[in-house]
Length: 250
Image (cartoon, rainbow, N blue to C red; front, top):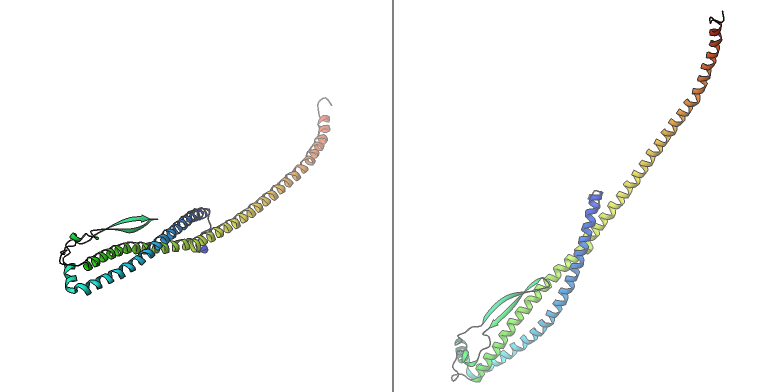
């Protein structure tokens, strides 16, 4: 991946920003993962208790209904069940646990008094009343178990998703970004060394040219006085002749 990145300072700054953002996100996701695991462990403990209560309530309800069938007969039991007028009502709401929306189930009209069950008190025995009460308890346990189990499954899925994101940042994205950062830094250092070497060569060449120019100028200056002396000698040779030819000399 590093070979596909152009080694420019702009890309280096962008990668450094992405690394900083990814590290912050990694830290946040780690905290979320740890918080979800703690919440999940609490729900798991609750789920284990609910499962135990559900199993006990189911076993108790089976005992009660079998006893009622044995004492009153299937016809009487079915007649008492059919006499029920008010059925339980269940409403669902939602609550947020560490960013995970889980259901919250509310139930009403599950547990009923004797006169609310619909069958006649005089025409039934206490065995049917006990069976009805046992199944009301079982229904409440089922509702609670449904709420806890659904919340537990949602939490577990969110934990797995968060763990995958943490691992993707920790073992894939961040190493690739840091590899790109190191690659660009190395390339920029090489370019800087090459530029420094090039500037040094230019400076040396310029200094050599300046030294050559200075030497040439010094040579020209050294030759200039000899020419002036020759001119003066020529002038001295000309001056006596000029004086001999002047009118004063005549």
